[in-house]
Image 1: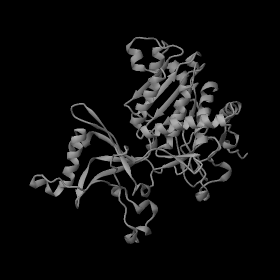
Image 2 (image 1 turned 30 degrees about the vertical axis):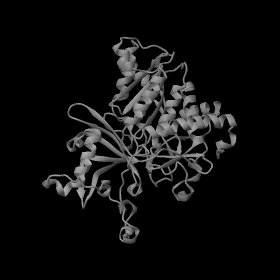
Image 3 (image 1 turned 60 degrees about the vertical axis):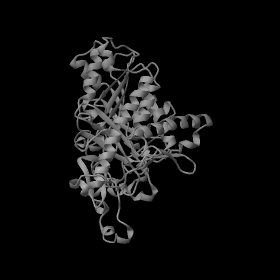
Image 4 (image 1 turned 135 degrees about the vertical axis):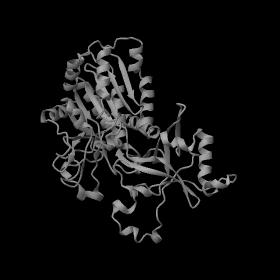
Length: 463
């Protein structure tokens, strides 16, 4: 059952359409390096496409009806969009669910210090990272600082051409004999992943602050540019991410290399699929969540009541709400958990089982189950549902493949699928194969990005 490389089947027109999709995707990656930035950009594009916020609809006292395009955001870090269909919504929705958070380094609440004329920001890594991958790279600082007066300052340093970057140092090879004897997980310790942000001391400084003149200069710069003080770090959400734009990868320009493709490659193609819906029979939904990389916890994760509460508000706006109607709607829904899969890497082939691996350039991936070891923590999709999805993809000439996450007992992972399945809905993981997943720069195939968008659109139309 080996799958054919999808590039071999593309016409010139299809390649042109693929490049258009990838160009939009790369732009999204460039402007959406945090979950907040992703939500901001999605709202901008959604409003241009005619979507209105649920809050606006409720405030205007307008009844929600077939054809309406609605979105709702939670704490600026989770968002759900609906294109209301003509079919009775109690019969369920077709849902694409992805996440928009990615592994990164978060700045601690009391982060700024100076040591031997060098200023640093202390960090705490977020999600599953190989810590050694994050050193000796140009890094950028993104996020917000909330001040006591209620203002929220957006911070973005390291992306513009004339911006400085920040950096994590590593020990020079000449002195690293002892370091190189350590296990990979210990070569760089979490508490040593501090961000180098300055070395120039402030000249005119009070005597008691002369020992921290570099730190004082950093604070002066931050105050002049953003109007923030050291105490404001206490109420900040600042993230360290790789600096630089998404790039074409390979001499043949067939791939995309960029930060955050897990899971923004599936999030954005899901969103694009929703935007292309014209007049759906069954209500279409795109749910983009936060906190998946740390267990989908918190008020903006999939385990929160955000999606359920918003669905209830949608029913209320349609004049259809009851607890039973809500439960029936969710239970009768179908979902693709749009999340990435591990791409087969010949350099590390011993971690994969070839017959059940995902390959770059062979289309979207269906993962019937994820989890670890004995499928622990997995949503295991029903055979009947897998058959339905296969039929939809085949009828619409979607290139797809099936896979597991590496060899049995080698590792594992999970998605939001098992959480959505708690409502009783049918769910299967379906996403794009990624090389170097969770690394600062990840790689995907342009063809797989395009096939994902096509697959998600076909699912919304026909599931």
